[in-house]
Length: 65
Image 1 (cartoon, rainbow, N blue to C red):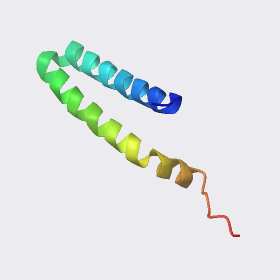
Image 2: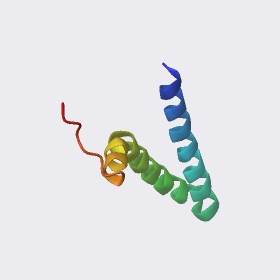
Image 3: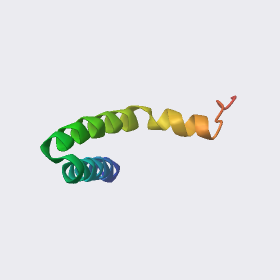
Image 4: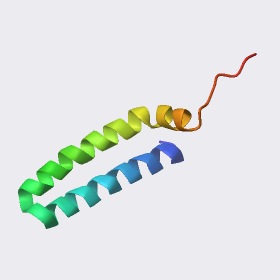
């Protein structure tokens, strides 16, 4: 794995741990399960669609040759 992949995995796991911890504090075991599902959804969306979001945010256009 290269450095970029390692950083991506690290931040996704960190987000998941934070969500699960917060869910556990707020609602116990049920909160942890709900937070896990939400974190998985956010991670999936971030991993597959973040590049498109950034390009739209900056109104990127294809470069003509």
